[in-house]
Length: 220
Image (cartoon, rainbow, N blue to C red):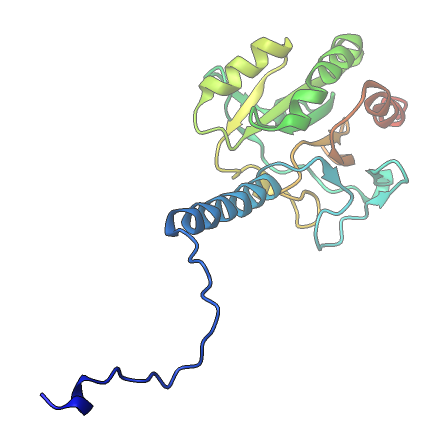
């Protein structure tokens, strides 16, 4: 071997500081946590909303007040759709059978924190007005089975019936603009003629529910 071949080879690369490599496991963990966080936030937004004032498009004649309660003058009200089926307890219920009474219709899910926050308020008002020709009815939605819904009713002492609507089919029967399927809980008041008189897309306090119900109770 010649002396030239034994000489060390020169590198054409300039000397650069070597950056320490981030361990793959750490990078992977951060990516997983970020993805999980985004997914959880998206689920929270799509699964349960504390309310709002918009029910989407459609001419439903609602006039929304500063308190988030929307009302319709008696002459401009739309009929409530067919709302019938099995209840959480497995019984048959048809809201049309309550025509002649005022119906307070509350849409809720056992998975929804605002629903838990308002549950006792609704039950308290129901006990106060049920002898005045007022019937409360719930629509339980997005619970995969009746077990969680029954546990919810027991925990919060809910005594009025609720239709079991896991896929939200009953909600889709309402005229466009009446309900926002993402706004859970929502509450509607159906007048004695079976027409929708008021609506709110938010959890209710006792006082707000009473003030929402009062003008419909006063109607002849």
